[in-house]
Length: 188
Length: 215
Image 1: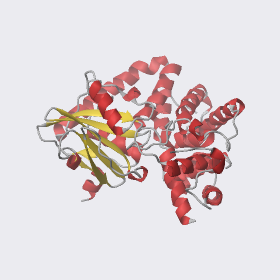
Image 2: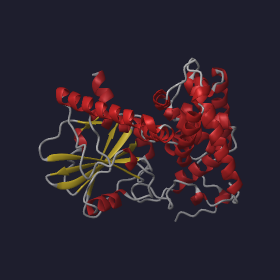
Image 3: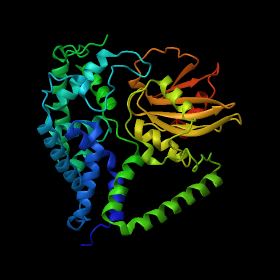
């Protein structure tokens, strides 16, 4: 078995990098940390290239490493976190504008509140379900490709997406655009 | 429930936008350079060959070439997360800083792919008339944190077109002091032209290459 060269690794990585980014973002629950995760995962994978069998599916191998690194990131972040998710100030969501304004300088409390509640609700889902959901919704990936990327069966990927949508819908569906009462946010 | 699911999907697409492909490419290239410095010259050589091939193809195909050198050529590393700024603030800051782009595409393909990778739809420019000079791109956190600005000079005056996904644009137009704003929607993309001129100059030049190819 001839190991994959670093150049070959880079080519394979680039072909599936958007999916890897989505998996990382799904697991850490934060798009801004996903780039750090896949960079660290790339370094880890490069150190293990001799263990990769080129006859196997590269995205599945690489996604396992991304998930491992992302879970470590998420655990480290959970240890540092001191504010409960539901009662924390929504302004603390990283990568978001510090004031609830849109591109026109106008206040958009409803949408922002919905996004914050969705991010919180996502954290209650299993990380594989989150990854399936993001690959399906954000990248519009077919279930067959999701199953290859995550090394699960297509039916499992489909049921993860359906269940995730149902759970999120139930959590946010009673009054989807109403700000969370516990957030204490004022947008006036 | 279907309405809630649509809201959830739209929110996920707004919150989780993968970076442009060249940013992701740079991540793995850096990792390879860090782990295996010996491969670096070969990568650089490959890039030089690719650049030469792109230039040759552009000449043969009559592509519009963008500036690939000079103070505005920031490279893929120019992309980074930024604090939120309104469109007119970005315009003012960019003018004050000399109106230089952060990134200059080598050719039409790279230009289209930048939008495709970030916003799921390509975008191209028709050949501009002589009074319009295309300078390059900048990234800003305005409509969303993945807004792309395209810099132009029209009769010497600075004009920026901001591009993002239309589903993220739940806003009402508002006039900016000293600037006119024009809006256009192309497929899934929304474009705002901020200009000191009375008429939109560059919005009509944009088109979706996939739609054009199907015709």
